[in-house]
Image 1: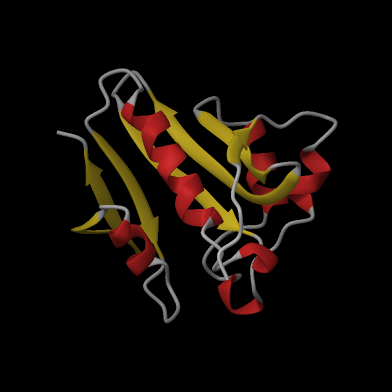
Image 2 (image 1 turned 90 degrees about the horizontal axis):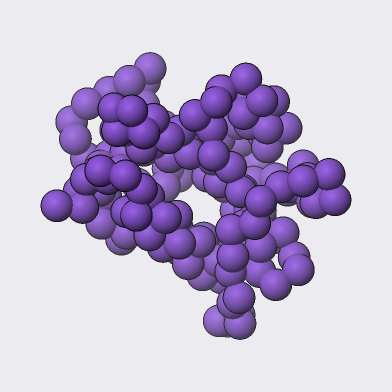
Length: 150
C-alpha cells in the first residue's frame, strides 16, 4: 500500500531529538547500522558530521548522518536508517533522493560514497536503485559504493 509522503530532512534540537532516539530497525538489521543514540554521540565529537531526522509530516521515520569534508572535498553517507514501522512505504527512497540532492549541491561535489555490510539482507539493491555502484573497495569489512555526479 502506497502511503502519502511529505518527507523532509529536519535539523535536530532539544524539542525533537527524542523522536529520533525512539526509532529502531528490525532485529535482523541491527548489524547493519549503529543505534541513533551512538550516532548522535559520535556527531558531537566529529565536526564533519551533518545529521538530520527524516520526517513524514510531523512523524519521525528515520535518521541520516553524513560525513562532509569540504576541504578535500569528500562526502560520505555515514549512517542511514528507517524505523522498522515505516520500511517498505517509500519513505527511505524519497529521503535518500533528498540527501543525494543536498550532497550534489555541496562545494565541488563530484561523487558521494557509502558503505554496507555484505551480509544477507544488506541494502545494496536499494542503493543501486538510487544510482550507486560498487567501487570494488573494502574498508573495515564493508563494501564501498559511489554515486558519480559527473
